[in-house]
Image (tube, rainbow, N blue to C red):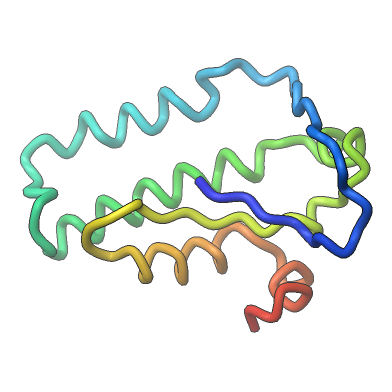
Length: 117
């Protein structure tokens, strides 16, 4: 998971994003997706592998949307200040995951701010 923000704002410190969510609010849904795809060949491009990637992105999208606005506000951000996207470090569908996730995870306001649309 990658995270970026508008560097034109005065952000000069580390922010502790304690959010009251249990640590497994993201972990367990991702484990469930991975365990459900044991028969997929993840070493080669395929329709099944791309469907797997899209399922992972859907779980991330749902989890990102569950982050309360108060978390952003507490750290002097608006949700729209942050550009969320996801990809894999290497392998197939890297660019496809970036392109798909950036549109799934962010508002049109954020996409305009970062020049994505």
